[in-house]
Amino acid sequence: MLIRQSAELTENDVTDEALYLRRREFIAGVAGIGAAGLIAPAAMAADAPATVKFSPNKMKIDETPTPFADVSTYNNFYEFGTDKSDPAANAGSLRIAPWTVAVDGLCQKPRKFDISDIVRRFPLEERIYRMRCVEAWSMVIPWIGFPLSALLREVEPLGSAKYVAFQTLNDPKQMPGQRRNVIDWPYREGLRLDEAMNPLTLLSVGLYGRLLPRQNGAPIRLVVPWKYGFKGIKSIVRITLTDRQPRTSWQMLAPDEYGFYGNVNPDVDHPRWSQARERRIGELLRRKTLPFNGYGDQVASLYRGMNPKKLY
Ligand SMILES: Nc1nc2c(c(=O)[nH]1)N[C@H]1C(S)=C(S)[C@@H](COP(=O)(O)O)O[C@H]1N2
Ligand SMILES: [Mo]
Figure 1 (cartoon, rainbow, N blue to C red):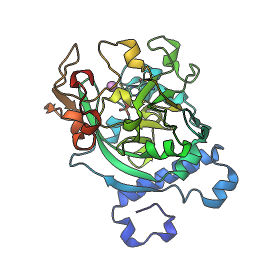
Figure 2 (cartoon, protein in one colour):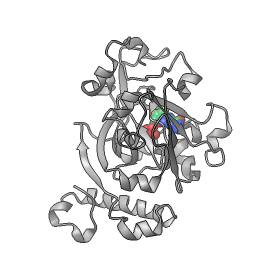
Figure 3 (cartoon, rainbow, N blue to C red):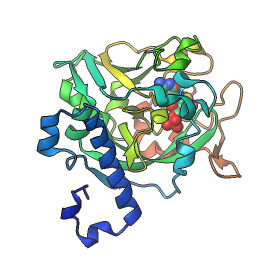
């Protein structure tokens, strides 16, 4: 089902009023960006905000989503500080409009995408994913986004492209955590091209039926549910197709602790702690961590023949 203007909604469409209200907020959020000048006035008159739609429940798991209050206040986003509470407290200084994402490197048609163009062009869907941080906590998050593959197809990757590199905004004025050299800014991540093209891999622009809170990586971030959370780079400004394995922030910072792949593997301990179990935020007892975070059916084949010890 799509978001439509209220006049077009029938009683049947509004079975879950809470969901409907949240969708209205999502519309309002995007329209709000428009008011700040992101969506061109002509485009707004023509088709926005009614065109900002998402299909709910495209992919569900049988686990309760972590409450929004936790999802939006217990975050890692070192650009705003290294404590879990820092991003929610400090991310207000991030300007999310205007915002462009450059997609370049080994492709036929490198280009810049305006964020308003992205939310209108790519069909947005809701997917409830299990997420797990390498620090052994986990959440279940109802993301709104679209497959990264759709964006990459638009720039037509060359046959020589083997990897995709990602970069976060680098602006210490907006991101106070960047005034300290905890990381060699900008934050960087990478995927192999086949991982990037896997249908599970999302670019997310929202969660819980609303636009992404800044602390969760507004206006656009990566979501790779079978990998540890650090792969999910936030507030992306550049995506580059390349023939060489990109260096990633955590790998550069601590190569003995974090590898390029970052696949969730309960059998490979972090050098300083076990990865066998995890604390689901909001629960008391620890859960067993699943290989590939439970997404092995969809992704294990990507790593066939590789040494699982090297896939962390
Ligand atoms: N730019 C940037 N992206 C980042 C991080 C960061 O510090 N900076 N932290 C990562 C880590 S370690 C985790 S666990 C997730 C947390 O994402 P969440 O706040 O949406 O749960 O973001 C990842 N993406
Ligand atoms: Mo993390």
